[in-house]
Length: 305
Image (cartoon, rainbow, N blue to C red; front, side, top):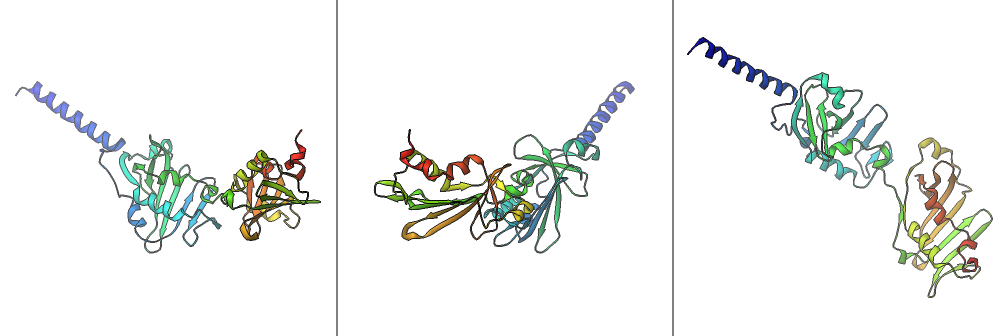
């Protein structure tokens, strides 16, 4: 073999070695790293809490009956959502070993969202979830204290990006329309009731008929009432509910009270609303509040032009 050919072969070999090293250093070797974070193993046991910390806020999800988020009652499905997210998460391709790439991928300690799972028994696991990595359910992620960045696949990426209010139940009240027999309205200086009878809906004590379209719109909002958000703790504590702007009582069969709702107007969000007997203060849009809080003259058929 000639010296020239030997040098050529050595050069080709060196090239491929350098390319292989670079590929592993910057983009990984393509092999799956599934399970390297230990997320599925943690989900298999009992979870005490999950904490997600970012530069702006901290979301603390604590197991219980019910689960809580930052001390407030969380969605009923919170536990199952977290367990499924941990179990189904796939730690896939290794994309970088270089800390200089962390900022671009959003997995620095300052820029990423640190998700820490605290099991009832065992050591906690912390990962940094960063920017999207292609598909909707893919993000860059690395274990706290490690340089390696992987593609994290599954719903856990989306769960890590939820804010406190996203974990809370926004349903204020829900019931079938057919179960509503009477709606009682109390305003400062005015009270009346919307009553169902065999002919439809009428108003008491006036006895006037009620406009069918307005009643349908009102019941559509009232019987599937959802908040747009929640009053923060300081705003909720400052509200005086002894004399609300409006009270709405929903009565079912056999005069059973299904719910009593208290409303306060707010120029920023429309309305604050809470259920009587509950401390949770929701925010409601002006549109929804105005559809529900009708005056007797606006509902009576006599008000038709």
